Image 1 (cartoon, rainbow, N blue to C red):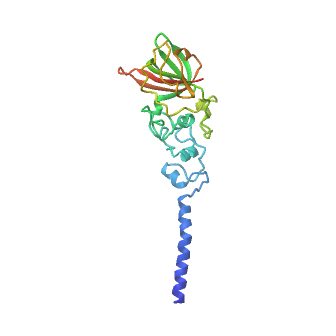
Image 2: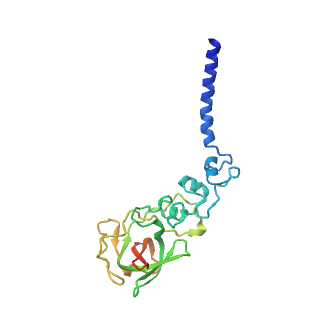
Amino acid sequence: MRKARFVLVAMFALALLAVPATASAKQRDRDHDGMPDKWEKKHHLSVHKANAKKDADKDGLKNIREFKKHTDPQDADTDNDGLDDGDEVQVGDNPRDGDTDNDGVEDGDEFGGTIQSFDSSTGVLTILLADGQNTVQGAVTDGTRIECDDATGDEAGDDGDVTAARHGDDEVGDDSQGDDAQGDDGDNSGPGSDNSGPGGDDGDRADCTTADLTEGRVVHEAKLTTDANGDPVFTKVELDK
């Protein structure tokens, strides 16, 4: 009996030792780069060479941030919304949600940057994006809501590893999410006129006019869609005050 009891105690002790060993194996990080081997293998990254500071998909987001954000380091646009993961993190969008603010417009169709030009005679607005290279263009119509944002907001913040070369030093700050750009815009007038639509009930925003669409003005958020003819049209343009 004593021998049998000893064997049972020994087996129980070995079982206890095996539990942390198994848990440890799941989080094994052989190259000590802060990313578990299991995650690196899943995303076809080397488990023998530290690559936390690499950017496998060239989306402006380093591998370690991809791991922390639960995005795909081999896919520049994890949620397929037309906006790269690094750009989404930079402007405060969720790179795993194609429509972060659930307004029916994909994040890739929402833009931030500065006004490059506005033609009041045609209503065509051109916005230079935050990367300082690309532009988007569309019409400002009777249905376009133009807002001025009094809130300064916080910078996207903890993602300082978003490649500076892609975005420059003057990034657009925290996008004000959750404001539905569409619907109830019937009071907004067209190019060259005042907008008198809703917005006064929102403490940090006020309606602006097309007169505020001046060159160099910072665009906090702009939403672009297409009309019945397939032409690009802005449904909302939110400016920094």
